[in-house]
Length: 180
Ligand SMILES: [Zn+2]
Image (cartoon, rainbow, N blue to C red):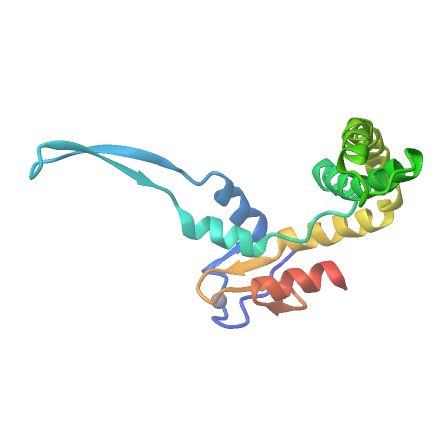
């Protein structure tokens, strides 16, 4: 595909595909160098990294791929849901009143927490699979958008992303690509 020039500088001289920006961003060199400081007579350790490039990558990062919700997110959700449910179940099963005697419900509740965690560990992979299947259409859509997005150009001079039809600042452009 032939690219139109940048809408601001009118050239492709400062432009790079988003894919290329990311490829470079991922191989950013981080490291340290040891040098000798003659004034103190000591060796100095200097850390260096290319922060600008990774900031740009952050700004250009698209929305999360549908169905890619992490196991961490799911298990946090279940734990948040299961703990109050466990608490209510404890009160019902042991027919105790939380205001009467603290120990009468604290121990049963503590005993029911491990099974609740176990249940969330079983439900997490099941829900991840269901979420993955249910979101398959939006995932196909996302993949199409991602292909167009990755081959769009970023102009380093004007801080603008553009393709043959549309242009915008990175955040705007990414939003447009994945929400149209
Ligand atoms: Zn430009």
